[in-house]
Length: 339
Image (tube, rainbow, N blue to C red; front, side, top):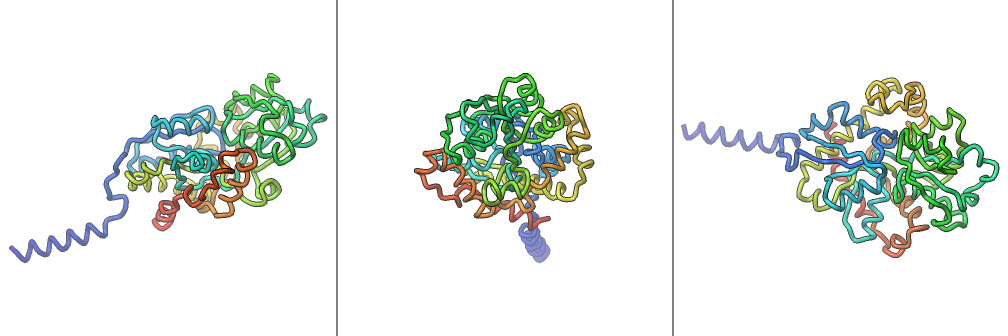
């Protein structure tokens, strides 16, 4: 009997060490995630993780709060009303500069995918970024990545960040309507909004960061875009939960690598189409190069993002942020090893 107990005890110990990560207890299985413009292709991996059941597969019950722009998601995280954000990588740099330790755990987009365009009736007078002075520019929300993109291009071309007015227009149909109603002179937004406006002949493009060629021209290389970020103390207190979140997003990226445009269109909600399924497919084709292949942010990408911010954000320039503190790569590396 004693021998039997010893054998069973040894086996139990073996099973404990052999247990997969998913067998570990989740510290916080019920989560609230913030995003600014969920229907945008910028955040497609989030929708895929949700619709394909990857969060549930990881034992997570995720409630998604969709804000007008990424700045509001960040505010909600800092304020404590949400646990995790799918948002722009730049926010992790800006928060480090403010002394708030917020880290990305997986890259969703290696290119911003943001497009700056002017209304067609303004194209004759706006030939360069310097011509944006005095214009009303629609962004998803002031302080969001679409706003940063414009400010970077303006400052790089001799203007000041406040030489234009930035108007909150959100994403999706509200952004399209703002252009069509003449409420703005120019727009900084993403697909499918941009493809819709292009198709309707409403805009002329000035800058396009959806492709590798466009990013080389604008930034000299990749510039990390959408990431998943959390407060560092959340990561420390909830490592298993953080790993499960990362696993779900990583699986969505891997699905996306092999998916056809039709597969994507079948998976997302129909209201993402802005009334035109074929348009959505074309928008996905235009933006598909932007998605991360590995989930890892390269050092050069971090530096490019920082170099963009220091041009118009004095707080970041003065802080001299340690970029290694903006990205914790342990979780995505573990997710990749488990696939």
